[in-house]
Image 1 (cartoon, rainbow, N blue to C red):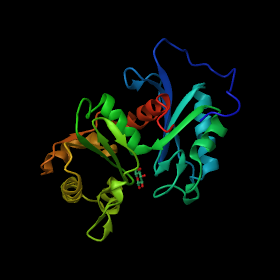
Image 2 (tube, rainbow, N blue to C red):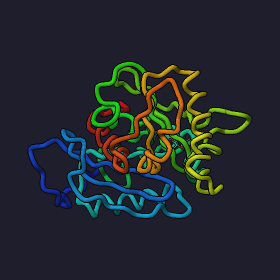
Image 3 (cartoon, rainbow, N blue to C red):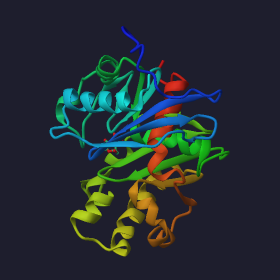
Length: 265
Ligand code: BGC
């Protein structure tokens, strides 16, 4: 939400008649952003990327986001994804980012640093709304569950294209473990698992989610969806599984959509 200055005078982005908003994807390893063409669901400018600072504290992350927005010359609507439960702009958890975010008003911190009209939402939720509008879940009615496999496992639950935010299905307890510690792509990398071995874990996890929700479609995203042919065909489920289509840009596009549609208000 916007309060205070509007950063007048630093708007260098050529405006067109097309509807645009800025999307920022804040992740555990990188912070990336671009102007998004909201009609096409695609980036309208080149993506700018910075490494996530260490520690990934509110002050340092807000500085990086401000630098990125300034470099793009953007003012106006800005959507940001965050890898945590976000309720009305406030982070309620911090599984894979600095714990000092818990209880932080992310919306306010980013509004203060960028002077933009900020909307913040969970990273997987952003990917979910982008895939529902422009990607693998476009025009799919019923229950769709998008799962992103990365440092953790993010989830987005959609009913007839409408999001139910903050489902956090990556933290389901399975065989005595927090599921994402075994089935995320970070677990694959850290334990040096082959796609075949890791797919067995994903299969077990998706079967569990399927038993709980009986979805009409699973969409699987995250960096590993680039190599979907290596593991998606190994899954045996009753629910169809489609790889995410927007890949790297789903978070940026979904964040910009949320900002434009005033998702949290
Ligand atoms: C967090 C989620 C996030 C997911 C993917 C999980 O550890 O709890 O909020 O969506 O990681 O980043």
